[in-house]
Image (cartoon, rainbow, N blue to C red; front, side, top):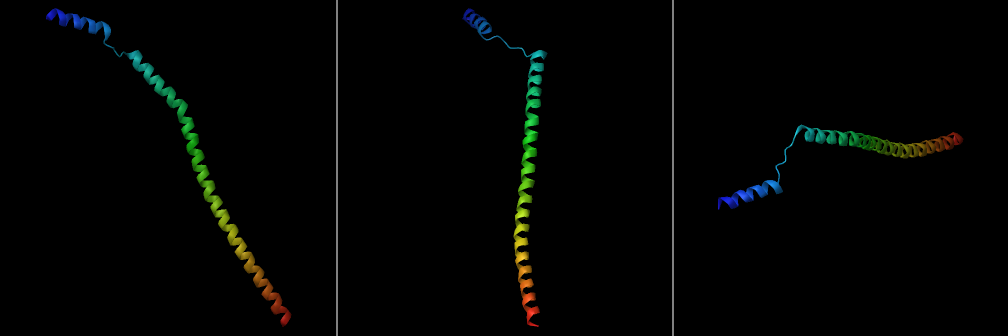
Length: 92
């Protein structure tokens, strides 16, 4: 029975060798992560800046539209007052 177990252990060692994680493997992994970070960081940063700029532009466009409408209302009010003044001036 022990011969069978020894044989199975030897076959296991041959088929599934123990993988040793050495310093080179760790270095390759760290360099790979660093390379991915260097490539992706600018993309993420630029996308974030575009998002904030578009948010500011949207806010300013909303304010511009509001001011444009207020200008129309004030212009019509001024025109109304001007018309009233012209009519009152001609009556007296």
